[in-house]
Image 1: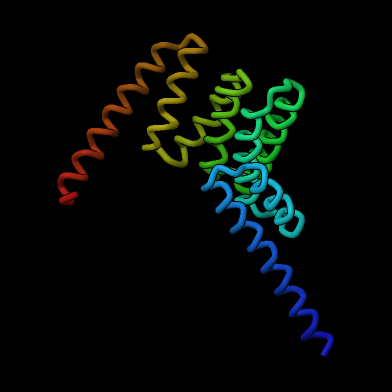
Image 2: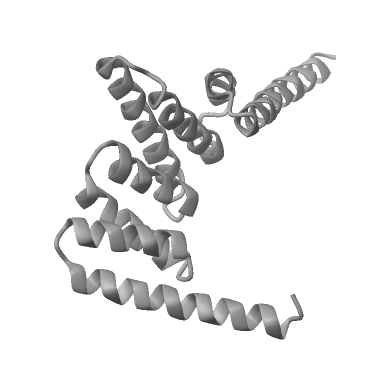
Length: 173
């Protein structure tokens, strides 16, 4: 009898984590980042090794930072976003979305393009045709004064796009 109760409690706790994740995703789709972050924090309390929860929490904190007028509080959200993205990457170093999200945070919010560069290079290691990462890495290269590397990336983007267009036509799409 006790074993059955333990199993019911475990199932209910798992369902609660899943509920909070699903709720957060719905909130995110509606751009309701504060309530989404609250739900994600509850889910993380239950499942602290779920990389997807940390990724979404990073997204929420980054979005929340943009709406904060006070510099100190804004920076706190950015630091939290950085923490959540880093934790997601720590849990899976090939997590492309988290690598890219952290790179975007570094480039556009924290003015740390040098920190973004290796993240974007990792994204392209795991997802070689990721044109968003290529565009952002080209921008970073320009910011860091390596225009030649940026030009190489723009050529790579053009070639990748041409191949994608060819595949689309040849598959009848």
